[in-house]
Length: 485
Image (cartoon, rainbow, N blue to C red; front, side, top):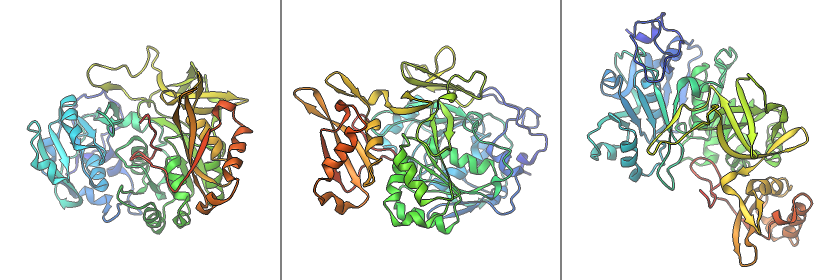
């Protein structure tokens, strides 16, 4: 008997971490509840690079090698290398576990002791045999995998599970941000009756906020999902996505700029394309529009702490000034010292760590650290507050300069960085990837791009030098690797 089929379960929210009587009408909503009560015609799938899961099989099986009931009310660290194994574990454990700590697959193992001391866990759920062989602090090891074994599992939800996301960890100790299914899914239209036939996909890993949003959208609205893999070439991923008929797909602007460099970009014919995680410049939006004229192209603003704030679907960079100062809206935004601040039911609950760090101010607004400037009836993202280049006492946001460079018709993508100067302290320089690499040999192209910048930017923001590159480094989060990261 599957408790998630209990007709008495509704969506009434509980206080974070509360335990309830599974037979009570106050039982929390969960991923499994949504999945078990959703129609499965046509069949819903999770497609990974080498394995496929039919979601209806979860009614009769489990991806966990062990007693699911033994994890009830416990804290589990999801540390699977395989994205499909992680996805199935999240579905099974939400509503059962008290806490789920989502560990990105690229997280260095040396950070695990720090994580386990900051967020004590009862079990490590993983497909990585080396974790089972290592001794940390006596945590139980539960093997998970993409293949489901027959089992009769009681998935009656008994907890409003806390989802703990890591916001960093590639260059230093990670930060821990606490969400619930309610805060994570706050921007998803759960009543979208048209979404059931959609096939979603994303360049993101689903253990990160951007990928998790797509994963939840597919699960909660009755769609299927094509999972990406960190070890898969972009061309192979796009080809596989096209073969599986992906209709909705998301990624960072850097993901899309790299995809636009591949002939495989034409392997998919999506209805909906979404950009998030970085500044969406006009050049990238225009390039995607030319490749997918039939698609609805949107760019969204979201962060792990602030949640999903808004998306823009008019094909223009930036966002309407009318978004700011709307009192009583689902998402309220204001600007203080040029920094965008967000308050909504989608924001994270708190940080975990010592010393304790404040996530929101006294009014509930989260300072995103993203600097915006108003031009006419629209706000544009200038860059991150912590990424400013100081040129002789004048501020330069690299993203602002990149947005201009990327509008040049021969440029595919760019990275603006600093170089030390004995006179001004710093100089602005740019690394550029061209749409046609052979163009780098054409006389005068460097000066042409610099003149293009001079026509738009103040003098101190114009790059002092340009270097043409074959590629630019992109992090595991899908963002350009910057010196401040």
